Length: 318
Image 1 (cartoon, rainbow, N blue to C red):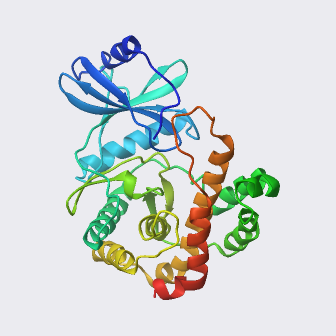
Image 2 (tube, rainbow, N blue to C red):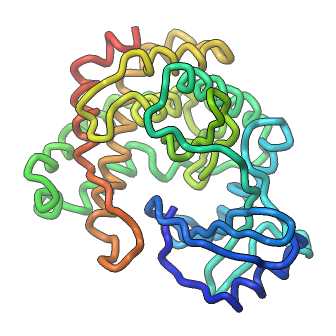
């Protein structure tokens, strides 16, 4: 989440009046993330999250993203429901940009997750995978390994080296991942971006899983590998926490046990997860405007994770 577009008080008030949520009291920009503009909105009836879709998101995909939230919320997954406007619409347009109002859920994203929290997140992710199998809409993964490799190739070696001299080697490593990628693992709708800042918790309870705007149809084991890469390392990817990794896997498998092919593929799937974030972070690093209210994220944090999985993945996922 971030703030790329600035909306004035009068414009925000007119927008909120299109929903049956009371009158606008306040709105505060949220300065995390890299893709959308977000505000914490307070009205006379409560709190909500307002999102303006800025980058990477096609308006045609919004029925999928927002309908998925409603589908999962109706099945008691800890996911915020979409607030429909007075005409029943899932989103509205402001100056050609789509905006949506989302339920606010209580909780805090863990900065230093405990094994118990990781276990709860693994279980919640498995529950989402099972519930999402009944979702009637489909969306292709536009950040699959072949696509994220293409992002790196478009960036080019010279531009990648301007971020870090060691970053261009991700190109050859990425080609190796794409060449070996499995396409026949059990699938559902996956979150594909479940970092700690996309999970809200009260103690050891998951109260919210948010930011489903990269959700798509894909391998459930790949989504678990993405979550593993996101949760089990320090910020820079220099230290792996085995207790967090074991708890995350145990929590997931308690709800949805992995098949033999899924478990065998996990070391490669985790490398594919790292490729995805190396590519997206490199692209954002090069493309983010200097005056945007957002902090660029270092792709090398995931190059280090990637190296770890190459060397230790078979042992970690045994």
